[in-house]
Length: 267
Ligand SMILES: NC(=O)C1=CN([C@@H]2O[C@H](COP(=O)(O)OP(=O)(O)OC[C@H]3O[C@@H](n4cnc5c(N)ncnc54)[C@H](O)[C@@H]3O)[C@@H](O)[C@H]2O)C=CC1
Ligand SMILES: O=C(O)[C@@H]1CCC=N1
Image (cartoon, rainbow, N blue to C red; front, side, top):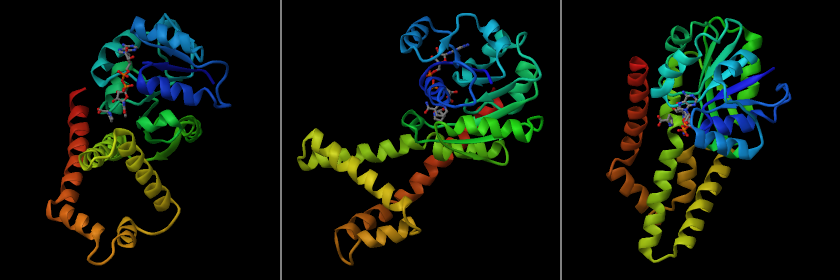
């Protein structure tokens, strides 16, 4: 199977790199980026066949990944439209661009919409995906195997769940970094060095995630294991409760979901 990735930035490069290890790929992954600077950078990596002619590249492949920013989608569709064909599968990693917009923009039917996340860079990505009805089961299985190369991939029932997973896993790494930054700032304020603050916080996150993954205990169950009655953790958790931190985090995730829905109406 021949695969072309369009848009070789953060996500496009990461997914192309992950997929290039897959035995499903016939030869090298083709990659195209509209920016000359990015094209030079991609060529230096020597991992893919970097293309200069988009139309020619589109005609050569079975599967096309769209990994440009949503606001570049329409221009890209106009450039590609005359080169795509009905047997090709188009996989979009773009937030907030609907399957219908892709089908009508390109004049094709087989579309898989997916929501990736940045930890795919280290093989720990989380991708959700959903197909248009014209994609067969076998074709979907193939696409899911490609997405699996970057971490975990789950099928979701419909596009609303793609927008929902944008609010949880797509944007989610930024919420985790926000929490990490806040804890690092607290550590610095207490007098720890930059380096010690980083180590204290990173190891705490990594350890907590590993504990959680390796057991059936809920997050509340684990919180109760850390917190002693009348102790330090309870003081912190009470402070978070009083400040309604849980509500604020939920609001943030819904703000991202709402924005994804709003964008889908726009593009
Ligand atoms: N960065 C993230 O954490 C996540 C990003 N996404 C989605 O991934 C998509 C790409 O995001 P990033 O990789 O972060 O952006 P990016 O800006 O790093 O990469 C986009 C690339 O597309 C290229 N480009 C622009 N117009 C083009 C065209 N017409 N043809 C070919 N290449 C073109 C740009 O030169 C750039 O290298 C977005 O649609 C975003 O919604 C989804 C989930 C997470
Ligand atoms: O912020 C964005 O729009 C993209 C989608 C999810 C993460 N980054």
